[in-house]
Length: 191
Image (tube, rainbow, N blue to C red; front, top):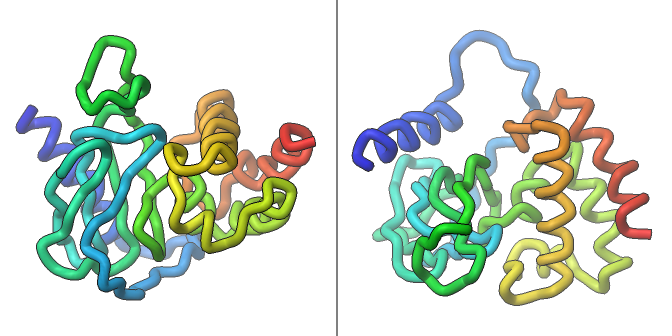
């Protein structure tokens, strides 16, 4: 478990520090600060994740996908690893699923598939275009979880299925044509 923790921490650190040299990734680095120290991580509650803010601060796990930072976190916040609590009972059971995606948020108090896709400029447009079809606001995308909202749950399920069906591992890759193609997929899925 300690080795898994160290690997997850190394991966999360690499996300923030980069590999050096030039990069064509144009994802903005946002350093907005919130007064809320508690972050809810969900694709269904994610238990046992490493939740790291832009300053390297690691949040401690509370219950049911809730994590608390000792100090006010700096964005972006990334959650990696852990287990998706499919039955939402707060305990890791057979049938729960390992979370192999890095989820992120650039604002708000939740880290979800929706906040991750909102953080990527290429997929943000897609979310903004069909949020109205689901009677959601941008604020809803930043603050609601799949447990709070059936609409956010629907978005999360659709995005997760697309990512898995297309073997996408980096949800913030602004050069990915597969991520760019999600606009067409969402139009089909939502209609």
